Length: 112
Length: 116
Image (tube, rainbow over all chains, first blue to last red; front, top):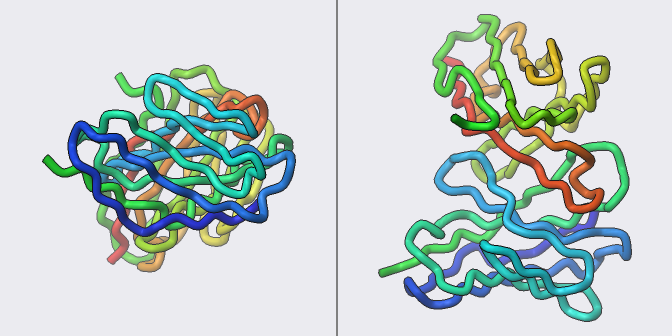
């Protein structure tokens, strides 16, 4: 599975958009990009995933570059409850394990 | 009620003791997983099970064993606990491979184990 690179930490003002970048320059054509977050030692929570098209759901938007070497998770109106560690993961579509390599993630601090 | 429930949530034990962490789910998923999380190391897969008759080792299975008692139950055992097994343990479920059609993992709230 391709490795990902994320900044270790970011700050965001409450109510503003939080844009979390992720580099995955070795991503293969059959690998999805997943985002999870973990709030203070709770179980990780799925946010969104995509293959090559941009995606949006009730939690966030995912923008994937045309060459798929990087992506950005967007939380459109960050709240204090969005303070968490955000993990970007790439994962092959087929396969037979749940081996998600979480890496170090980005600690997002949303400030009042 | 949580869809994925882990017990106990916290446990302190001594070296050499046998410990069992239990996981039950109400999501009706076939696939269940055990991960451990250590500071600075992310989550690492210990064991996974695709159905009641299927058990597979993950990245770090040494020192651990599992039992899939039913579709909804997946237990992790430490036969003889040692201090470097002190960690936060997570159970997770999915209804298909997480990379197929975008099916995600659903995690429990974690079991914090301390081995003295």
